[in-house]
Length: 406
Image (cartoon, rainbow, N blue to C red; front, side, top):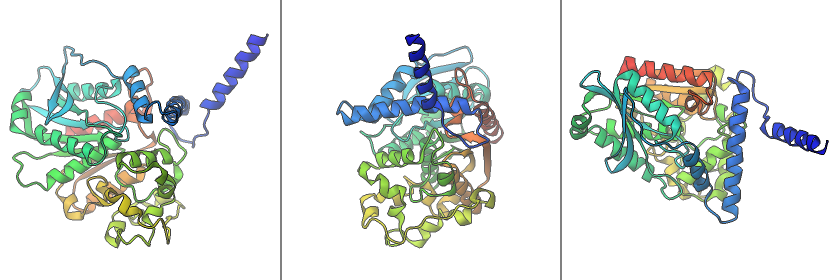
């Protein structure tokens, strides 16, 4: 009887920990709750390890990821897979076997808040293998350096170096790439890197090959406003809670974690911050850039006074290489055709939507793909053992767009 009672208590405790009230409309909420419970557990274990001086939180999380997710390069009859260096950066190469001699190419940057994850993770291996096979393409997944050892602009420099090599004649010959059909892509923080690279290379007249497309999957694109409607609506929706996004930004920028409350209150972008001029504010003015159905009844939070000198402590907040949404119109106009995927239940939804609108106004052809039942990271759950229906749909539509536009 005691064992039954103890089991019932443990089961109730587990159910209490797993259960999280979610807004109506989320695809397969119990799957999302289970995934979130695992992620929260690992995050708290990381917090404890860091507090005890054992290791940095990100190191513990990446060890868990390596144990559970990282796999060796495995070729099959349809896709040849190998590990190599690209522009001095480690990468995993997926080459469709047979088919056309001259192949389309995609360079891909994984997500993980610039601190977590790997191109060698099972979910990214599946994604890139599927892209290579269905597109008869070469897909290169890049293992850029990670925080806390690497901070901005290290990740950006790795992404840029790898993409420059990807566009080179030497790499085109090595992998039989069609240099007129090349795309840069990424999800979350990887979408940030993809957008920044597309901006830089679109403005480089010395290139002998250019990107034909950019594909941004729920990208993170700015850190001045943590009270956009999607941040307000989804601040407690897994798997990317609003405070977690702020922590990732501080880690990426090599900043003091104690600044988190100031950023959560938008004190870093208060009206008395002279470093942030009207032009910068206009580039992420969601009251003008978002459609009415996304703004709903939310109101902007713009503090009159904030933390004095905070922008000086975080200069990259205004650097378009870190925050591509802040780029000038003429820079956006020189970027290639874009695909922007957003999810309703994601704090980053409005970053992607604002960027898509700014690209359109700059004259760029944009396909905006929004999932009303989607959540952040859903594309990583498009295969077994944890398959999400919205993840499967998002992946199929993403690959279809690449097929039609590359």
